[in-house]
Image 1 (tube, helix red, strand yellow):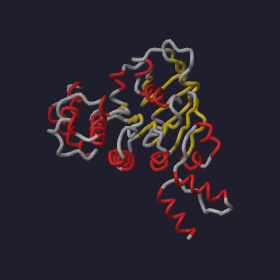
Image 2 (tube, rainbow, N blue to C red):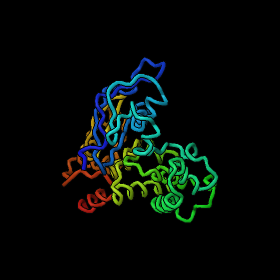
Image 3 (tube, rainbow, N blue to C red):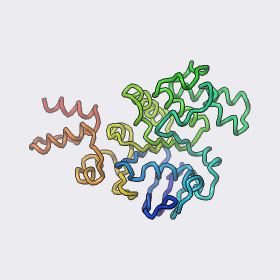
Image 4 (tube, one colour):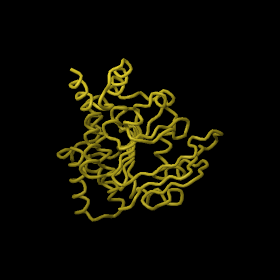
Amino acid sequence: MAAELIRITGLSYRYPGSKKWALQDINLTVAPGELVALMGENGAGKTTLCQCLNGIIPHSRGGRLKGRVMVAGLDTATTLVARLALKVGMVLEDPETQLFTTLVKNEVAFGPENLGRPAGEIRRTITWALEVVGLQGYEERPPAALSGGQKQRLAIAAALAMQPQVLVLDEPTSQLDPVGSSEVLAVIRDLKERYGLTIVIATHDSETAAAFADRVCVLKEGRVLACDSPRVVFRDRELLRQAWVRPPQVAALADYIQARGVDLAGFPINLPEGRRMVTELL
C-alpha cells in the first residue's frame, strides 16, 4: 500500500483578479484510508483547498497556482478534470446544486453512463451505491421529493458510483437540519470504517471532526496553522482562539473542569469520552 494517496507540496493559489493569496505554502499528505478534517473560519481557504484536489483549481477557476498537488499519482494541474473525476469524488455544501436528473437511479447512473460502462455494470453500481448511503428502494423517486439529508446522501452515492479513491466533502452538513446531518454523518462513518475510503472533509463542526477525523488541519488566511490528531488540536486553546475554531462541547467542559483544579485521567473530546469522564468524577 502506498504511504500516501495525496501529497501537496508548496501549494499557493490566487484567484483571477485578486492580489491576495487564498492559499499560502500548503504542505500536506493524506494516507490511504485516512480521514482529514479541514477547519477554520470563513475565508480560511478550506473550499479552495478542496477544489485543488479534483482539479477545479486551476482548470475551471483559472488564477495563479504555485506548488504541486498529487492525488493517486496524478498531478492535478496537468491532468484533465474528467480523468481526475475517476480518482476524486466531490460533494458540495448545497445538495440542491448537485442534483439535476429526474430520478434517483438516473443521478447515480449519470457518471458511469458517461464513461460508457456496460448496462449490467451500471445497474449493479446503482444498487451498491444506494445501499451504501441507505437509499435502497428510492430508485424511482425524483430527487426533488427527497429531504435535505437524503439529497446529500444521493450526492454522495453519485460520487461513489465513479468508484473514487478519495472522497472530498465541502461542508456537507452545514445546510441540513439535525436529522439530515445525522443521516449524512452515519454514511461518512460507514465509508471510513467499513469501506476504508480516504476522505477529506471541510467542516465548521468540531463535534464531527472529533468523532471521525484521524487528523484535523486548522487553516487561517490560507495557511495551515496546525495539522494533528483531534485530541492535540482541540486541547490547544490558543490555536483555536487564533483560528476562530470552536472546540467540541465535551472538550470545552473538560477544559473548564481542569481550570478549576480537577485532575482528569485524559482529555475527552467526544461524547463517549465525555460520558466516561462524568462517570469517573461522580
